[in-house]
Structure formats: C-alpha cells, structure tokens
Length: 156
Length: 138
Image 1 (tube, rainbow over the protein chains, first blue to last red):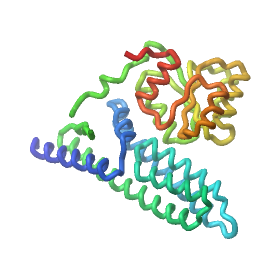
Image 2 (cartoon, chains in turn red, brown):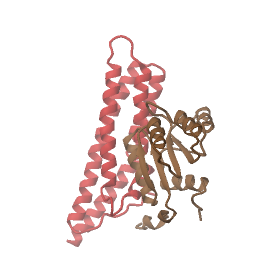
Image 3 (cartoon, chains in turn yellow, brown):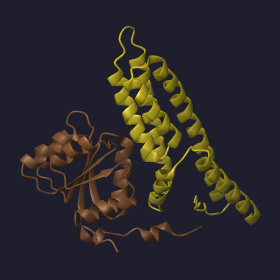
Image 4 (cartoon, rainbow over the protein chains, first blue to last red):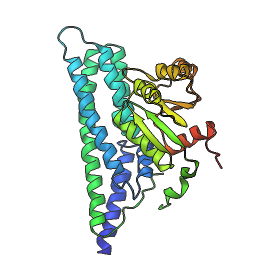
C-alpha cells in the first residue's frame, strides 16, 4: 500500500510540475491551493468549476457578438474578453489569460479574423485545461483512497 | 518541500473585523470571500456597486470594503463616490485588473483609501490591511 501511495504521490508531483512548466498554470493557482484547508477541502475544485462555467458563458457571449450579420460590436466582444481575462488571471489559468490579452488587442483593432481565431483558440485552451486539471484532481483522489496524503508541491 | 503554509497565515479573528466584498464575477467573489475567511475576517458579498450602496442604506456597516472597479448597474468609482456622499467613512480598498494610471487615479479620487491590482493573494490582502491600519506586519 505504501509503495502504491509513494508511486501515486510521485506521479502527482510530476504532473503538477509539468502543468506549471508547460504554462497551463501560474503562481496564482499556488495561491488558491494555500486557501484550501480541512474546512474547505474542495475549495480549488469548486473555484475552478466556477471558472469553467464562466468560460462557457463568456465564450458564448463572444461567439454571439462576433456572429452578428452586419456590424460587429467589438466593445461588446471586448467586455466579455475583459471578464474572462480577469477570471483566468484569478485562478492562475496562464494560457487562457495570455490568449485573452491578444484577443483584447484584436478587439481594439476591430480585427475580425484575429478575433475569430482567438475565440477558437480560447475555446480549445480552456477545455484542454479542464481535462488536465480533472486528471490532477483524479490523482489526488487516488492518493487519498490509497490511504495517503496529497503532497504540497514546491514549484520553485 | 512540505512546509506548512497554514502556519504563515495570521488569524485576525480576535480583531472582529468585518468586510464587504463588491464584485460582479463569481470566481472573484469566491476567492475574495475565502481569502477574508482564512484571515478570520467575517464578510458579506454583493454583486455590484448599487447592492453595496443598498446594503449600507439598510443600516449595515463594515470595517472595510473590497471594491471592484468594473461592474454592471453601478461601477466601483460611482459606488465609492456615492458611499462617501452618504457619509460612509469606512476604509475602501479598490481592487481591479486595470493598471492604467489614469483609471487608477480616477478610482482613488472617488474616495479610496488603498488600491491593489487583482488577482488578490494572501500577501496582497495583508498589505491592504496594513495600509488601512488593521494589521501590523512583522
């Protein structure tokens, strides 16, 4: 059992570190983990769940705003991008936030093709992050079920 | 590698501080609420500037307010101005992702006591509390 726990803990450490190294997560995610405690053991998962709901809503708004036949209201698109930039920044979703920065520039330049490209990319990116984090949370569950403790991972 | 981070977070529950979180974004509401909870600060959450004004009109008071800038119905600048005009003298800290100096100046001039860029962290919140004289950093 101890060998299994040790193996899972090592897998979890390596996977978590890879998410930071590949730019999916940044320090703000670490800050969220600091807030998780015995009183709220699922805090990070809950906040991330709110974030992904935000992604669906805001990306939907952006798609509708860009789909207008006639003149696109870029300020409307930009408002949703600004919101998503804020949420992604708050949870440490580094790649999503980076895309939002570029997306905002295209909105300001009223660049339709640029906006559509960013919309597609941001949609892919949040879904990729969601899958990666689900895998990470599953590893945590496996460690606990095997009788172990989820290790704190030092990123630096 | 396994430093207990919980030991580094001060507990201010004895100070019996109260705070109001004003933010339209559910992710930020959740994080700011938890940050304050973690420091032992009782707090309420509202979704925009108008709700912040209404809650004060109903007689509630807080030691400090964490005020977002961009919100629908009534934004943070207008809400801060309105609260000051109502005679609300509690500390207000503006929190926003906007770093533009002009916008920051406009927000400060509305009546803020402090300003921090989002995203908020434990150390940024402690910095706010220190600036507002609620906490002495060691």
